[in-house]
Each structure stands twice: as structure tokens, then as C-alpha cells.
Image (cartoon, rainbow, N blue to C red):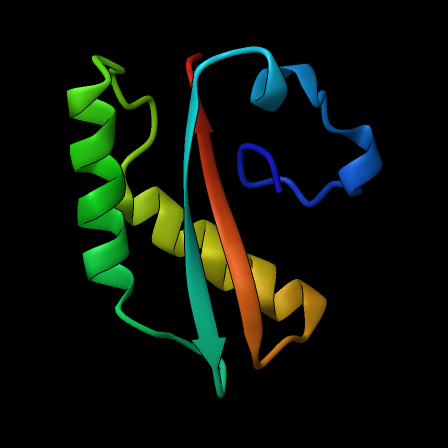
Length: 87
């Protein structure tokens, strides 16, 4: 997903991740529930602050996007990688 829009991974610009500044968190999904999501989001936003990156997305928007992602893909367990790049 990019900006709350479901996209194929192949359509994403890998340069955003590999050549720019980006930070990520990997969150475990068990029985359609994210484990320790609030801890992961707090760590991600703390890392953004330490890197001097102004977040262009809110934790509420990330939570909403994650919910859309698991519903559209019908997944109940797995890992989800949240990546935030400089805008």
C-alpha cells in the first residue's frame, strides 16, 4: 500500500527505499491482530525524530492503512513491514 492505496509491489519505486532515507518497523500479525503495534509505532516515530525526519503520516493513518491491508489481502497471520521515507 502507498498512501492508503493498494498497489502491486512491482509498481513501487524502489529508489525511495534503497537510495533515500527510510526507516521501518516489522510488525507481527497473529489471528488478524497486530502484536505490540503501539510499541512498534512509538519506536518508529522516535527513530524518525532522531533521524530528523518530519513524519508526513500519523499513527492513526498507519493503523487505518494496516487494517485496510489485512482486510484486502485476507491475511490473519504474518509480518508486515512499515516503511516511511522522506517525503
